[in-house]
Length: 204
Length: 391
Image (cartoon, rainbow over all chains, first blue to last red; front, side, top):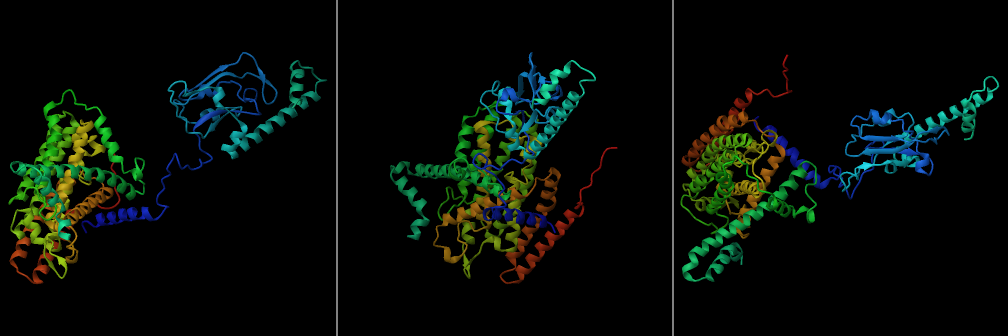
């Protein structure tokens, strides 16, 4: 009959209206600045650079290969490669980023930089309160602001970080095994780079 | 004691006016009454906006505004300050004078409607013999202001909104008038105070409000539909359908002029609800005879606020109609029902007392409602929506 649907609708909204005063489950609003809900583990907002150990500059995993800079769709990453080299986690001398800037306002949180990084050096943070009163400098984060420890990575994405650590450890043991194999073979052929690599691989 | 509480505003006015010299008293009396209306209803408007937002929030299981002041009660103050301090932009190609006048015309004409509403026993600014006629004559001018706003803005959205508004308001004005005419036929008067008096009787403790008769109920439903359309409230808010027309006829208004449109819209809602209360819900009379000691103005305003609540409830429930649905509904359903209702009201008047007129009048109206409703819905395809794509 005409008007039936209207009455049904009115009953539904009346139920909502009255129910919202009675049942707490109906009111899903979280009053944000005062109340917060813990972010889900897979949440991703903005990239950060992982470092191992206590010193962010020494422990930075990034080797300034610039793959992320090239792959970044909105081109928000700017990297300047260092002139000198520093030993990486495996002890191998590597370049490091002399400059690593990401623009918060340009980044679109796509995670492509994370996907392409071969060194597990860039990961996604779940920190979302990135607002600043400085439109230009404040929104451009340099490598010091971007550097965050591996422990921090473990606190925000425990599962993923454990996987990454396992993978890195496997690589390390493989590198050590390779080095050991190389060290066992020197009588056959004395290659020039071998002495440089051997102490580094075994020094760990 | 009860007498004093009932007449408190009237006595207050007499005391205030009595302070002035004799020659000024007639003018002062009018000024005091007008000032009371002009102060009270905008205050009610401010309260209504926040309650509407909170109520709509609750309907959608949200909290609604709760940041300004305790429970967000100061929200209208913040809104007022915002709209007062905003830049008042007039489009370069707009007709300046008409653009400026449109919101004023709206608010002024809407305020004039309050003059004839009896808001309590002896509480009416101008007790005209043809109060209802005056009300509708004034009420029709709101259409003018809407069209002025839409035309003078020289914006296609404004103009389309105004065209829709005028088409809608004229269509539903007919239904509004015809549903009220039934009341005039029965009470035999165009004076709103007399219409209230006619309903202010009780038998077995229950009032003789017109809504409790078959023709009154049908008339009230038609009146409610027509008022919703007349005040451009959802589901009839096509003139300002924001998903289609930006904001309709007030697209080009900003700052306080926009606030005036908003105010005018809500004031129109109050005044038309007040008229509906007067015509069908017994105006200021109490709902039970043992409650007659409660001040009459209390009843008027409670009924008014109840109507406002229903408006908000409807807004929270129904989606917007399409233009053709709106027009079909007005001319093919509401108008025939109103005309039939006039006939039924005549029958009711001439059949005398007794149960027979209840049965016959109700039967005619129910049969017409079901029949017309069936005819209306026959051509509609209710069910899963089907899509046709271009090949």
